[in-house]
Length: 264
Image (tube, rainbow, N blue to C red; front, side):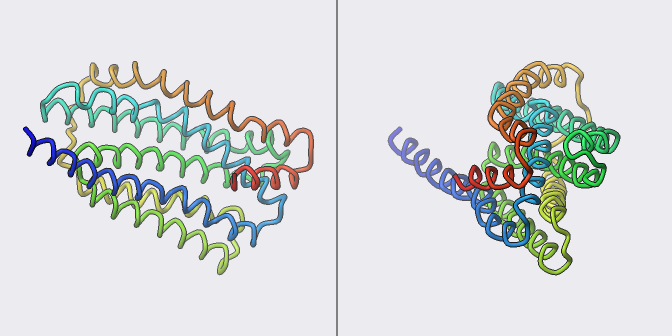
């Protein structure tokens, strides 16, 4: 028993350290990008970027349909590989359905949203790219979550490192060499998450099945939609101040406020 406990503690420390340090890279990336973005953006452009980023975050919180929360809830409910394969496949199916709906709706209603937010359709492509990036981010999240459950911490670390480097490299290149402006970080997020998602799926395709039961999908949605709505309301409450400020002060002030909040 003592050997077993020591083994478990060693395993916990080994995987936990990798997961903890690797997961923090996303936050570090956001912080590292701040001085780069502010070097190329005016305060007004940073304000616009923050509002579009907020829209994509709210959309992602709603359209992921809580699938990752459901996967966390049900994955270990039965000690059966076939059961876990079915639950993981159902969760991935629901996630991809939400991602597809988000991308389609952003294409259809992006111009209207751009007019509502900025009184112009000029930011239509920005909104589509931001929402598409958000769709691939939460699709990637469920794949990395599965890697954690299967204790594939080293693959998790490699994929996360690759994603962070790609995101940073694409964003910086598009800002410094091609002057993509506000579009640059949205391209960086979209392309890096898309490539990482595809890579994980290719490497772990045997962990899924195309024989998905409607009952499993109902289980995922029944639990997940509640989490999705709760997450959406949380983000809305946490970030609605930017939308209120946008109506009260110039966009440059929104940019300064958003920068301060990001640093904090």
